[in-house]
Length: 277
Image 1 (cartoon, rainbow, N blue to C red):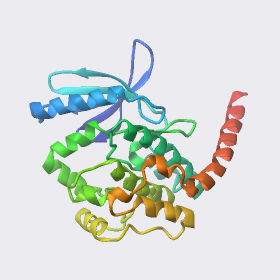
Image 2 (cartoon, helix red, strand yellow; image 1 turned 135 degrees about the vertical axis):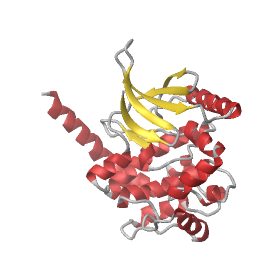
Image 3 (cartoon, rainbow, N blue to C red; image 1 turned 180 degrees about the vertical axis):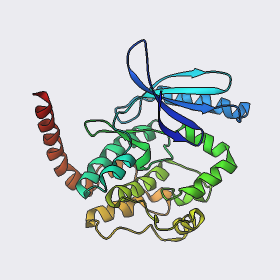
């Protein structure tokens, strides 16, 4: 099928299930360079994927294993990623960012209560449906592989560490709180078109700044409520960061996001009327 994405460990193809006619995404992972332990861990991650079921999470459809390839079949999400939307249409208004962040939080809350850490929250890993809902993807399987393949991992991190929490950079381990830090970075990315520290080209310099700065730079265009939301996400001590559940109650999402959701729903209804005739 068509290649719709590429990762460090293989490509994602669009394919058709000839039994049902359903369009699916197939993530192919090469096994030839992996040890038996790494393959065993990978299969455990697939078991985690199997048990996840939520509207804000890309659905697992099945798995096919050959001698040197593991193909993971996933739900196909037609609109691509928020990263692609950013590149095509430019940055979002703050009210729209609040709606997207609320939707992303729904997925994170589910993952965290299922004892799964996404570890890779950024616009490029968040898919959108035709009606504007989001689905989290690219977690679990890829991330444990990253961790196992230390040299590749270092190189990859040095390339795009902008969304990484300081404790992850310092190799203290990822947790649900690390996802919250990355969520703050993603909110800035959606608002400005770029993640924090995008002006710095050197990955190691970015990591140094993330660890040493009190918090990442807050864009001047943020409202006071969004600024407070970001400061909550960017608490240096992960134990002090609010959970996904707690962030739902933040005034920024309650007011800006809530007001916009009504107009967003009306816009969707209007669009449906236009396309129904």
